Image 1: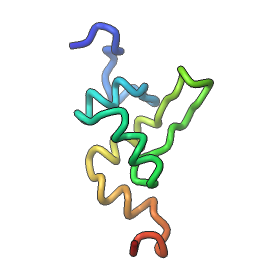
Image 2 (image 1 turned 180 degrees about the vertical axis):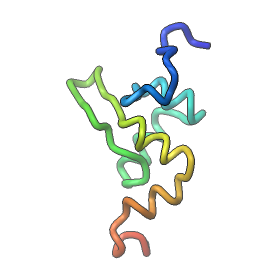
Image 3 (image 1 turned 135 degrees about the vertical axis):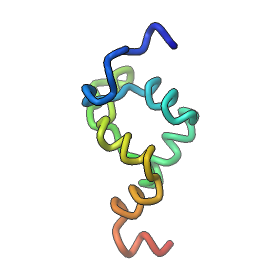
Length: 82
């Protein structure tokens, strides 16, 4: 386990940093930002400059559990048909 990542249980977390998402999802940084640009992944909840970006743990967990369900739930009907 990476000693730089927080060790508290996921259920107690409200925000994830990018390294935590990358580790949990086994996906790349560029892929996450590509998905965000297409409204296919949650946008960051907190951005305080270019080096402090955090995502809602609830949103990320929902996406990791069911990516297609999250996309359908967060895509307007006219855009979903594309």
